[in-house]
Amino acid sequence: MDVEIRVQDTPLDALAETAPVFAGRPSVGGVVSFIGLMRDINHGDAVNSMTLEHYPGMTEKALAAIVDEAGRRWDLQGVRVLHRVGEIRPQDPIVLVAVASAHRGEAFRACEFIIDYLKTRAPFWKREQTADGGTRWVEARASDEHAAAGWGEP
Amino acid sequence: MDVEIRVQDTPLDALAETAPVFAGRPSVGGVVSFIGLMRDINHGDAVNSMTLEHYPGMTEKALAAIVDEAGRRWDLQGVRVLHRVGEIRPQDPIVLVAVASAHRGEAFRACEFIIDYLKTRAPFWKREQTADGGTRWVEARASDEHAAAGWGEP
Amino acid sequence: MIRVLYFASLRDRLGRADETLSERPATVAELRAALVARGGIWGDVFADGQRVLAAVNQEMASAEQVLNEGDEVGFFPPVTGG
Amino acid sequence: MIRVLYFASLRDRLGRADETLSERPATVAELRAALVARGGIWGDVFADGQRVLAAVNQEMASAEQVLNEGDEVGFFPPVTGG
Picture (cartoon, rainbow over the protein chains, first blue to last red):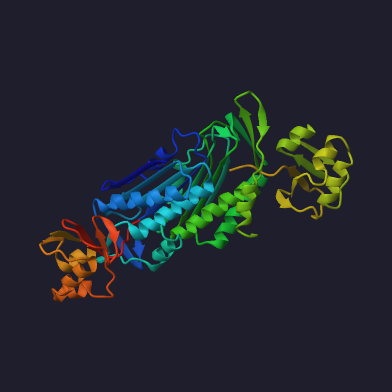
C-alpha cells in the first residue's frame, strides 16, 4: 500500500492531487475520493473565512495511525490524505482522502473510515470569521463522534 | 439537485470532470467520487484493450432512473455520471460518479448506491481483447448483483 | 409489429443485431418462446434457464410484461459496465 | 519536568500556548487536577465534566496514562478538522 500524508498551509488542488493514487498503476480498478470543502454558511451564519489550526507533529502521527488501521482492515493499493491548515475561504478544499483498490467496496469502506476517524481523532481545529466581523471556534459535532463510533475500536 | 449524465466514446478526464459538481456552489460541504478504471489483468489474463458497447437510448434512461432514485433517498446538491463506450485501454477511466452534498454521509451512500446499481441495471457490456489476440465478453459478477441487492428495491 | 434488438454476446451468437416482427406476441415471455421455437442457436440462447434480460421501450421488463403494437424489445446478457 | 501545550480555544481562554512544569504529576488526571487547583480560568477550563482531550507525546491519552520525565502533554478541545 502506497501512502502519502501531507499537512499544508498552501492551497490544496484536490482534483490534481487525486491523480497519483492511481496514475501508473494498472492494477487499480477503483478510486474513491472524498473532498471536504469550506461552506459559506455554518449554523445559519455567513462565514467569510476560516483559520485551521493543528498540532504539528501529532497531526501527522494521528493521520498515519488512521491510514495504517484502514490498511489492516481492507486491501488497498494507495491512500492519500492531504489537509489544509491556515486561513481558507469558502469553496476552498480543506481535506482530500483518496483511496485506490482493486475492488470498489473496499475503497468506499476505507475512504469513509478515514474521514470519519480524521474528524474525531486528528488534531485540527477550525475558527470561523463571520460576516459581522466576529470570530468563533467551531464546535465539534455529535454526528461525527457517532460516525466514528460506528466503525468500532481500532 | 443538479444532474448531468453523459455517455461518450471519447476519453474521459475523470478528475477534471469532477469539478462542475462543486465549483461555484459554496453550500457544498463534501464531494464523494468513484472512478472506475480499466485494469490490465482480468481473471489472471493480461488484457490489452476492451470495447464497451451499450444500448443507446436505454442507457441514458437507465442512468437517469438510478440518479433520480438516489435523489429521492438522500439530500444531494449535484450528481454527475459519465461513462465511456467504445475502445479503451488499461488505466483509462471507464466511469465517473461524483456526488456533492452538504453532508458527507449522504454523499458516500448515494455515490456507492449509484455505482452499485449502474453495474447491474445500466445496459453496458465489456468485451476484452486479451494479449494472445483473442476476444471475450466479460461475464457479469455475482458480487455486483449482491451489492445492488443490498440497497433494497427502488 | 414489434422491433427486436439483440446486444453484446447475444448479437454475436445470433448473428443478428435487430429485426422487425410482423406478429406481435402478447408478452415478453411469449416472444421469447417464439424465438426458442426457431430452433438451432435461437433455442440455445433463449432456452429457459439462460440468463437473458429484456427491456421494453428501453426500460427493464419482466417476462410477464405485455407487448403493444410498435414496442421496441431489447434482449441482452447481464450487464457489465462501470 | 514535563512540557505542556494548549491548543485552539483552550489556548485562547488560558492566554497561554505552552509551559514547562518542574513538578511531574503521576498521571494525566493528576496533571489536570493540578491545573484546576490554580483556580480562576484554569478551574473553569479543566473542571470535571469539561470535555478536554489530552495527548501524551503526540498520541491520544486517557486520564489514567502515566507521565514520565520529559513527556510532552497536549491539551485541546474536541477536534473539528476535515
